[in-house]
Image (cartoon, rainbow, N blue to C red; front, side, top):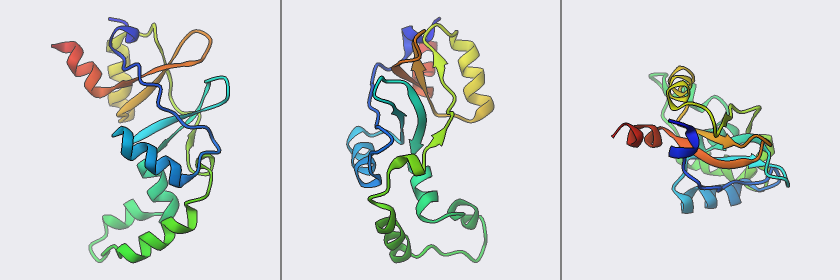
Length: 144
């Protein structure tokens, strides 16, 4: 089956100048954990996620969580987040994000998602424009 048959046609995205505060609002309201950042023509420039913002506020946070003596201070995290709230997401997004074509095969994409541990991929058309997103749940629903 082709990606276009199972993808989510949600085009929720941000531009690179969107602020961290605006991004958090968009992620909260949409229920998404990441969104593509696109240029004015709709070409994917990168992906920005909750994790990217947490790492931007507290670099090394996820590695520190694995340490036995680390107890996160909520006030410290809040202060750091306030420091970056007006920064553009372009400072934190993952550039050159993996994209898939709407004509790609679902099995090949499932393999890609598993090997790269990806939860969601932007789907582009032959002109490179964002046309949807493929989530792991889209692949699972396809199996039923």
